[in-house]
Length: 500
Image (cartoon, rainbow, N blue to C red; front, side, top):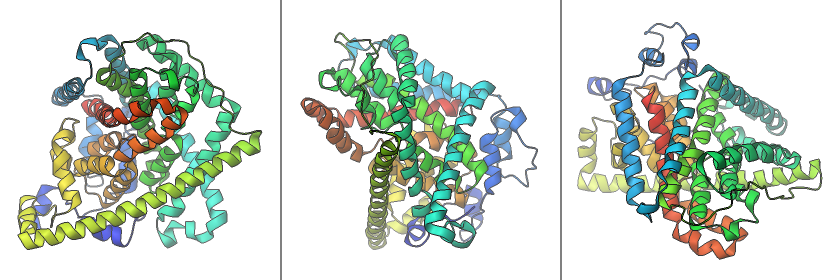
């Protein structure tokens, strides 16, 4: 598998041993790199027929293959249920009106989320649907590569130059934005969103406007989806605004979803398809999860309009104009992503340098190295995030050896962005540091969504631009929406973890 990053980034990342025994045996031992096809086979092994016959010597994750043959562990289910109860309790404690929570709506949303989780893991028909869409996303990556090769030539050859993030990932965002714009111009996205919104409205007694925005977030960004209900945003209730914000932070837009598929797949078709299936599942599961969390945090108390009507938003005068507008928007997003990653990774390097010096002066580095058995050799941001969020991650079913790793990823997502989190996950997969492949899959769900502090400002500016009168409410509910979106991702991860 090609190197995802090189230079200063690699130098700033603490090496993590694959197992505790390897650490105790030799602190200087080189980490084994898990073969990319082995991981792809494991991730794809959702049915007995898909399980490949490999020996334990060939596949270090042999036991995980067997865990996936529908033999659900009582311990995993009980741990997952504890996670679900804990997450619901946290949401309940932060609710603005505990007496008026509609538990029927919450229960249906959770049941729908759980059914999707069970379907993606054990129902062949559901698996086939997600696999078809996953292959479609991978095919889009191939189309993007054709355009990129025209512009960058041999620089796209990973055998010669390795995995260059700016050339492999950013063009995907641009092309997918143009493709989404074209589908929107033809009205395809609106029709799919309308069907999903109608289901949400009938099942959970939601308003038509909030249902459309929530369903739209599965395909569009957190500021683009509300455009589907642009005319209704100014008159939305507090609960509706809360759901619009929470759903926006919980799901992933198509453009970045394609980018994450390419990032985690690392140029390998088998891995890309396997991750595409789980990334799509994570984004779809996030919608009912967001509904459940939003309706607990800010319950609906006013009368609502159940009619599902899509606002007609002009995206171009013709096909070529819509593609051009989408490409320009995609270029802006790609530039923002590149600038954001450059700045955040530079800041991480700076913070780690300062932390390392403090650890050296106070002798904390020695204590950390001994306490973590060599997992971290110095005080660093990764070390702090790992153990700060590890207790929360335990609720999702991640194995004990990998708690610190996934805890770090959650911290990076919240404090920085999910792009940083998925970048780190891709690097960890390449380095083969996970003791259990189950942790890789759960981490994919934990990182789903735009739940980070920057998104609060993005929504205040984006949604507030549509409805200036709602800006004070957007600012008031910003942190609560961030909490709801984070809990929605943890809900999905806990449900998936129950049956892996």
